[in-house]
Length: 320
Ligand SMILES: [Mn+2]
Image (cartoon, rainbow, N blue to C red; front, side, top):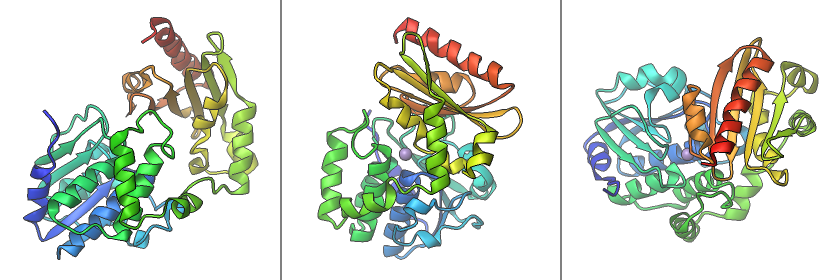
């Protein structure tokens, strides 16, 4: 059955006060979707809060109204989760959301374990921004240049500048519509892509320098330890995009970046060309998309690394 935005639209249309939330450690799709929906609901006369547990990342702070995003929202009659399938992804905002009497979910991640009062879920959509575009249309709000800029930024982010596997006809047609409505792809990319601090550049160098392969080069991985962060002065957010750089290794099929986050704590990012690394991430307690996912593991570097790499070698052997 094709996903239908109308139940969410009805819930939103019937509520004068709405709390919009998105996942912690927000990406351009999270923030772009959040802001565009907030603008549309306000244009319809609603009182809207847009909230995220973490601050808006620097590279999307150019988005119109990005300074409105709060990390301390109040519950409202209707709460909405955008670009995440379950309240646990909201971090510190979970409590405020769960206090909302009714909850709607707008998401494109696979297999959410949570059921809201109304949902618009489509894991074939390249970005949550595409689903928010549908919701705005169904709400009857006019798509402004500001909304289009936010949505284009989200779509651009989740499709890797229209280069990932999820870049399909729907993504490109909607992108064209957003440009027609006033989004400027060049300017959005100038702001949102490749704006690295010097410490972030140095951290990337370390990540690339530590790259290794296994399984005849099909499995590519790298490790960033606490010492790499201390010595470069880089922050955790500076790791964004490094796992994607590993895709540059010829012959690779599966890519993993291990990032230390304190003694015995590791954040693991997975990418693949076609194998379902998302399933492996879920097995390990994490989540994400089929070809871009992550999890958090505890233990020594060697035990965490071997546990993950051995499982991925198995995935490569199975060839599915
Ligand atoms: Mn997304």
